[in-house]
Image 1 (cartoon, one colour):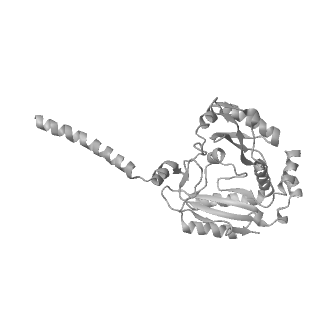
Image 2 (cartoon, rainbow, N blue to C red; image 1 turned 45 degrees about the horizontal axis):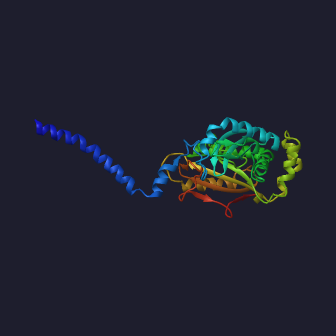
Image 3 (cartoon, rainbow, N blue to C red; image 1 turned 90 degrees about the horizontal axis):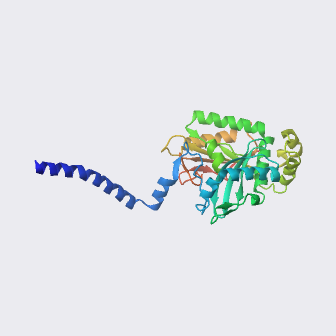
Length: 306
């Protein structure tokens, strides 16, 4: 009986040891790239941008989270005073030399952008009176929102197309929470954002109209800015789509269908279209979905709609 008891005890002990040994061996043989992929990438279906991370920002990130309410209040006041714009503050993330504050203008012109809050990490102190923005970035993003106002009817057709696309095919955009918490690209939707190039001598004049009258209408904007006066290549639509199902590779047939639709559908806005179709994974720290397997058509080979 004693021998049987010993054998039984050993049999109960060995399996957990073997399992633990296998896990440890897996970790040892895992390459840094494999570990990074396992830890950094999540399904775009679940991604909210809350884990947004900036290089060398770990020291200031706890301060950003602890003092979020104070940061948000100061940032809202700053945008009202400097840009005549009401904003919603969605996120504050530690950066190398301060705190990056992600904001959205919920009213027209609608856009996402950011500001920077100075911080003393040693004293765990923020400086709300010294908020600053990168030169011309907010102005550029504001103009992106006014472009969306000018193109409102065409953008509605484009929006309906993407809604239709995601019903017919297993593709998705990013969640609204992710846009709010982790993007700063001007006018942004779950499927694309609008950028503009070669208009550096134009948008300050249009922005000034807004600063003089923050309630400016799209009709007034159209009177002062006619998109037909400029080359279509000046208006850039960056489209980012993802496969809906986890562990699915970007589908070439779907990708070609999207290209064909962008080239031929009636009513889409004039512009230069770049298209990305990714698998289901997105980097939860950077908010970037591009990987080696992503399908893409980009400048100078993007689609021009005149």
